[in-house]
Image 1: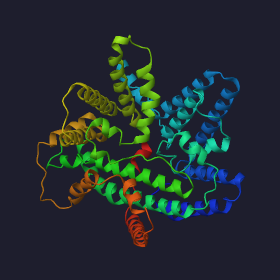
Image 2: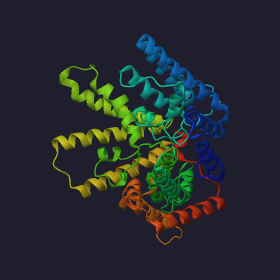
Image 3: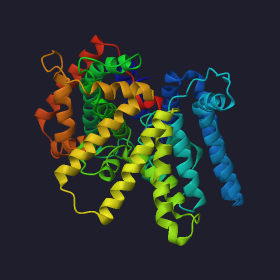
Image 4: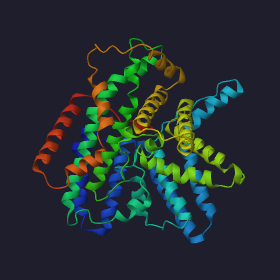
Length: 459
């Protein structure tokens, strides 16, 4: 069930708010109502895999319970391996089979495997909790709290990747406690902003550039259209930032504050700065649960620790690329960003101070160019795009306004949460009217076009 669809906006969401309002005075029912609503939401979007989600929650919660009682760290290790094994089966079986076939010189049979929605995100949530439990940082929680942490419907399919410490204590509290009206209105503002980013920015840009990438799969891109393909990262910014803002807004409607996920990444002045602003919760997960263990482990002698540090950086970003998709083009994209991070680290230590404007230009150019590799699907298609950049864009063509206007929003405006905080600092009747008008415009737009799914549902 997509957040930008009539069934969700006009059906599921109002019903969920009403049901939570009815049980808000009953502590024993409050959290389980949200659990049931989350399961219903997930079942609507991925009916065959609802059992997988339920079993995943039960098995990991029982593993946590067993570890607390026995202190056998092998239980946590086994649970994490099982989680990663399930993820690898659904996401990488055919990728491994295809590459094995190349090594053996004969094609391997490919399986018809559908990717369960949100499997990467609830797997990562399991890992964060279990690792912290073994470190003694996380306590054991009742089943209802843990089930809601994994399956809370605003973040179940594509994040943000909230730490247990950020949300667990919020579960079970009264939603409609004194002052709930402000949080509720703030939630509506975030939902409206997210829908606007998705419907009027990401989707409009996508309708312009998707045909270019489709054309690149079959041959060179002529007529200067390849330049349009460079705006893919702008499209996915507003697609995923829009989803994240909607998720944050939905969380506020149900008394839960989720972490921010984007902070105006195209205003970054270095690639390090960019990755501290883009998909923030994922990068914090990779930093704390992948990079730090690799960089701090005793693999190489002390004199070679800088080499280990940079190797860990490269491997972390390569895994980041592989997580985004089972393709060598994704791995290449991750390795390129890992190399850029290494070069940036060395420059900051040994190079002269780079002017902010130059750093911004180089960062934006690198991100937009490597975004072609990410989006193209194959290295050959990416090469067709890069070849097409030798032909100037025909500025006289019509319908190019999104290509020029929407990137300006990404480059010039602050983060959406900063804009919303500034506008909602005190009650403004005109703002409520504006939100209502924008919501109406969004509903009209959704009624006139087919609903486009969010990009990160498939990662």
